[in-house]
Length: 420
Ligand code: UD1
Image (cartoon, rainbow, N blue to C red):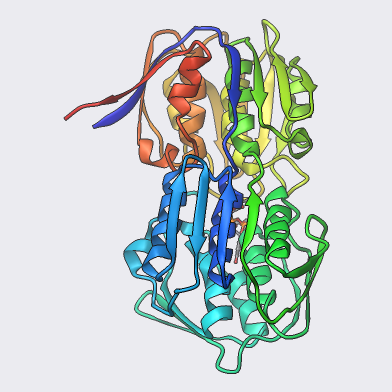
């Protein structure tokens, strides 16, 4: 068994450099399917979800190579193979291969995706958009069979909800479809803009990414590209929560402060002092955190659902009561039961969690049940009196590179233990 062991109560100090954004790297790797030549990605995080994407690319016949944080993908010898179920099930985001595979080969057969257990996570918006672009979609034995015999064509697609994955899949399908496609009520997350920047450097013509309306002018072919993936804003929020909960001052390096606009005011309400530099952020926590009041998760530029759990860990020891409303996923409070085992006072009802601040948390053996919930338990463990052991590390390794080493380098007493 593998677990992370934390002896809580230590202050943090020093600096930590952020890795590239997982949620950018995954669609960007899928976009490599469309390239006629080699793509080079800098700042590509070394995470199990990224490894799963590279495995899919290799299975399809791409040559991939990693050296430190630089990943090369050469899709010139890619072939139209059905992606095996076990590769699809390694992560939910594998659904983002649907658009580019369909665009390149006019046919793709994939298993319904796996991934984080944080709700139903349907893919109806992805499928109805692809249908509108000319795809025929049927399902058989848990597999989706998608064909577009005469190729995909442009379409005007209005999303009921600004789904990140659906927006990406549409962009990936539309970049080589004939004509101008429009996505109305598109997701506006920084990772969408990063994907568009990558596609444009491959020769695509995507306009308006980062806004609610995205226009995609189809081009005939895409070439190779050299791209630097943006910093991971959720990893940034996690380290900020770790510093907040321990009353510490730290510096984050290789960060893009503008992407943290929806998160910074919450920490400021807690009494933290935040200074933004060119590509660094100085974070100073007060002795006693104050409740930020209400936190509602919303699509970007609202407060991100991915930061809900780590910020909740900090709110557990705030002075006052914090009311969370989770508007994005219907089942994203799996960390709450574990926080309560550590002494937190939290009541949940449907999408609402009411956190009444306590003066301290206590170490316990806890289980991470999803990626951000796992990071939340590590954050709580840094504050808790005594020893916390967090299991379920495969979730955490999907989205954080060397989290325990980074926290140890900041002065936390934390280590990964592997028992035979
Ligand atoms: C992405 C992020 C994830 C983040 C989420 C919301 C990646 C790899 N993952 O996930 O970290 O938490 O955005 O910011 O980028 N929905 C539907 N039908 C669909 C698609 C989505 O009903 O076809 C619903 C989902 O069930 C969910 C909500 O829309 O309730 C948001 O999902 P979406 O924005 O698509 O999230 P993901 O792309 O899966």
